[in-house]
Amino acid sequence: MNEPNTPTLTDARLRRYVLIGVCIAVVLAAWGILSRLMARNALERQAADAAVVNVAVVSPTRGPASDTLVLPGAVQAFFEAPIYARTNGYLRIWYTDIGAAVKKGQVLAEIDTPEVDQQLRQAQADLATAEANYQLARTTNDRWKGLLATQSVSQQDADERAGDAAAKAAAQQSAAANVARLRDLESFKRVLAPFDGVVTQRNTDVGALINAGENPGSTLFRVADTHRLRIYASVPQAYAVGVHPGMTADLVFADRPGQHFTAEVAFTARALDPSTRTLQVELQIDNSRGELFPGSYADVHFTFAGNPTALRVPANTVLFRAQGMLVATLDAQNHVHLRPITQGRDFGTQIEVLSGLEPADRLILNPPDSITDETQVRVVPAAPIAGSTTGKS
Image: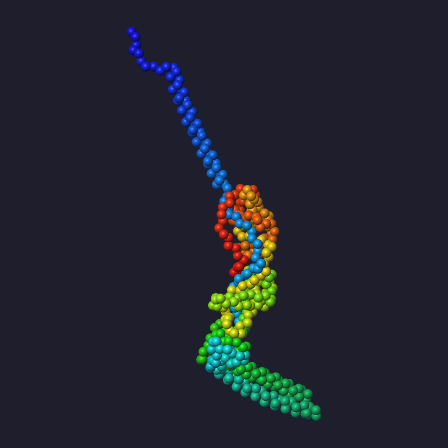
């Protein structure tokens, strides 16, 4: 018995289906491999781009024809002295208050000193007694000298009378010195101005207890000579060599906006303070019109000759390595080249470069410590750098 007919695939059609399946599999495999290669290449490009450091660059600038340095200045009177009492007592009266102009030797106040007065009277009485004793001893000594000449008394007795007269003379001199001392203390009852000036402080009043000596809180007056003022400033080491007596500087005071005063350097310390590396400078200015006040604050403007031939670079372009001070420059292909430089003056935000750079060089701002020669970098725009040679200390 014959089996019923069923649909069957021919060999040609089967091979076709197999070929199509194989092609699809190959295409899918190739697409997968290609997509993975493309992703890997893109990742490598991203990694390579990320490995390139973005840097900002700046070029050196020429130094100005002159440099201006602004420093804080302390204004002091030409002479200023606290006035203390030299004797004990109570303040009887004062004659000058703050702001009063006084002359040398003028009486500022008077002190009532009853104890010193009594001591002086006692000393004067002691002096009178000593003088009387000395006169008697001297007369006796003269008489015994005459008796000794006639051998009416012994040499021993005559020597005793001579010694007594000498002792009485010394006692008289001691009493006289004590009287002189107390009279000096009496003279200190009058408090006098030591020089021409202005009374800037009065720290006492009538009836106040006065103790002699320089004790805390015992200042009676303070007198200042303001006809000429002293201004003290500390000049940094970079500028110290340029400061000399006779040099002028401008003064600016906050309480006198828009006004400039000219002072002259009178003295310098001629040595740097080892703790601050600064040079103390004393300037002086005429104040005969009384416009300026001692104790005030001033901005002192010094002007120094510049060095237009020297280049200046921002301080944040410098690297400090074992071989010295370096800067990172870029060539046309943005490859890094480290160059040694010779430093001049340090202006804080800028550094003077004496050798090692050209005006057209491009310098990297804030270079990383790990940067090396031939490193490839990418240049990005930089914010303007505000460099200034003006500094305050």
